[in-house]
Image (cartoon, rainbow, N blue to C red; front, side, top):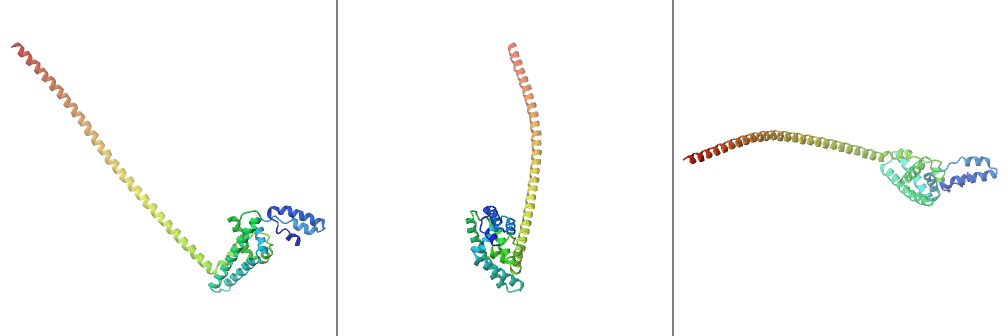
Length: 252
């Protein structure tokens, strides 16, 4: 176990090289069984490596998180007052906040950045280990990342009631918003239909009016043509009468 612990502080990108070197050393020393166990070790993820550094780098905060998690668990199981559970959960949050600050330092020491995704994985693993594997968390000997599912059970009790109420409120607000959206869409659709009907009515009236004007225009053109014909005929008759008058005067 001591030989494997020597790999605990090795950053993930250097792990394989360090592990293989340790395996060779153990074989040279005649520790074949331990060499096989070390050879079976897998390169830890960055999140798991950082979590396993916390027991050494921030033991008080790790202990504070474990103790607060146990208090929260007892308060839930024993049906203690909401104040006790709330205090325990507040202590959990404070310890977790300090551990994440230390995790950020460990990430920088390893030459990486504590992204939001990496922070989430670290937080899930630490929170779950505080209740399910506290000794491994203290010793920095966790072998796998953990989800927050187990830790989430601590949030039943008062916090869960609040969460459920918030979910119900959010669901009600979402349904109300959806109803408002549907009413608004229906009203907009009705307004568009009315606009279309009005436009159709206006178009029909204008078409009828255009047809009337076209008929009036055609009739006016016919009347004007007739008037021009009559005027031409009258002019011709007048010219003929004037010519006859001149002829009669010439004879006299």
